[in-house]
Image (cartoon, rainbow, N blue to C red; front, top):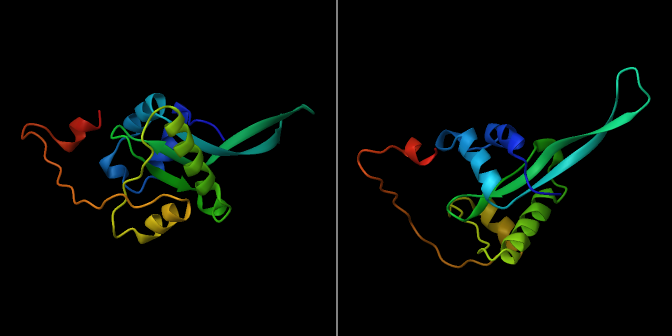
Length: 147
């Protein structure tokens, strides 16, 4: 378990439910500048024509911090679920953020009851519930904020 690498932005963006509201470049930027956690599966691969084995690491679970300061984009590849990986990553990122002087929090839609219950089971407590309306200057688009 360690920080995400910029070259992992593609797999994160590909698996992001809200990728239409984000970009791979934006995710790469966030990984480079904000705390994150990735859990990787290590597998040994035999080099062609050699008895030496090399370790290959595959990102299987992650959580990152956004420009807005909240923790999110939590995801575990389907065949790695139900092993506690998202829990470990979430708690590790919360600890890291607190140690670095950041607020550790998530912003979850109230209809996402599974995510609310998940975070409450990890010890997160409901602070407040808000409805947000995002307004931007007329001459800009949502894409302007992703670059």
